[in-house]
Every structure is written in C-alpha cells, then in structure tokens.
Length: 260
Image 1: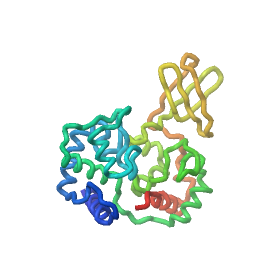
Image 2: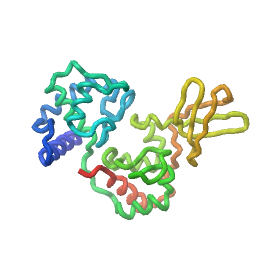
Image 3: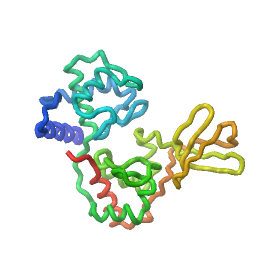
Image 4: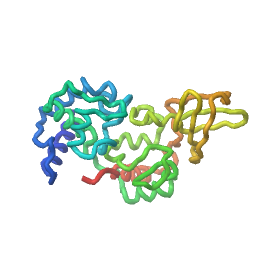
C-alpha cells in the first residue's frame, strides 16, 4: 500500500510539472484506484495482476514499446494494436480509459530507496570485475544474452537487484516479464549445447549459448531436448564480490533509469 501511494504521488507530481499538456492531467487518487480495479477486470488476464506480464507484455516499466506518450497509451487501450494480441477494449468509456491509462503509468514507478553504496564505483565493478557486459546491454553497450538493464532501476527495487546478483535463477523464475529467457539443453549426436532459447516452432529450435554463439537445430535430429525452468545462465556473484563491491554494483543498477 505504501509503495502504491508513493507511486500515485510520483505520478501526480510528474503530471503537474510536465511542460506539455497530458490527457491524464487532473486524475485523482480515487481515479487511479478505480483505474486499478478496471485494469484487473479487463487487462490482468494477459498482463498479470501487477502488470508485470504473462500472455501479454510487461507494463511495469517506464517506457512501453507501442506507446510514445499518454495520447498513444489511450489509443492503444481504446483501439488495440493491429497485428498483435492486444484487442480494443470497447467496453470502457472515455473516462474509464483515462483512469486505466493513469493506473498503467504508475506501474513503472518504484518507491525511492536509499542506495547502499557508490553507483560510480559500481559502474566500474560492473564493467571490469563481473564480466556483466558480456551478457547484458545498457544503453546500447554490451551483448543481449540476458535481459537488457538500461532501465532496470525504474523496474526493480534494491532487494530484487541484490538477489538477482546472489541467486539469479530464483529471481528470474519469479519474474513473469522475463519468461522469454528460457534455458534449454539439447544433444544432437556428439554435440551438446545449453543456452537461451531464441526461437522455436514445430520443426526447429534456435538457441544462443553463453558465449553468444547461435545454434540452429532441426528437431528430428535431436536426441535430447530439455527445457530447464528456474535456471539461469548467469552465475551467482555472492561469493565473487565482496560486500562493498556488491553494494556498489547494486547502487549502479538502481541508478539506471529513464531521465524525467
């Protein structure tokens, strides 16, 4: 409840300070509460009860793929997105659509937390000691084997970020927004490969291993094929980083977010 109230206050403050007029300006706390109710009725089945994704995309992020501004968000809710699984929600009237859009905007905002360390030093540790850029992209730099971290500070809190470093498989398994990061193991003759599933259909599967190499297999050639849930290619850094380095890296990740 405390987090939600802070999110609401952040939303209202940002709306009031924006230089451009937004169709969501003037929404009250009561409007956002009703927006949450409507979201759970019309949107949660696909996007998750907390908006973190599932059958539909993750909405608990500061920037949405098909939404450039608040007008576009209203359009997506009212008209859907052609060529995708997002339908038009024609049962909502104009005011209800505004309330749902206002609530969606609060999903990507977290409570402000005090950083436990130095984010500038943490950036150095991230880039040099942990080998993190070999798997993660931040602002276009790095490789995309693991989830992109450009806006992770807007999406994840301190406790989650710390656990993602010490027990990555546990946090990944709890994050519906990362369901695309499924690890598979397979064997075709003498070749054994473990990696991230990139694509799969009835006849073939494509995976990327930890080195970034892409492998494509026909399913008829596979002798073993296992989907490994609750598993991550990322190693745990609980023993690899000392307490200060861990605090600094967590602080660096907390600092990553959209500039508003």
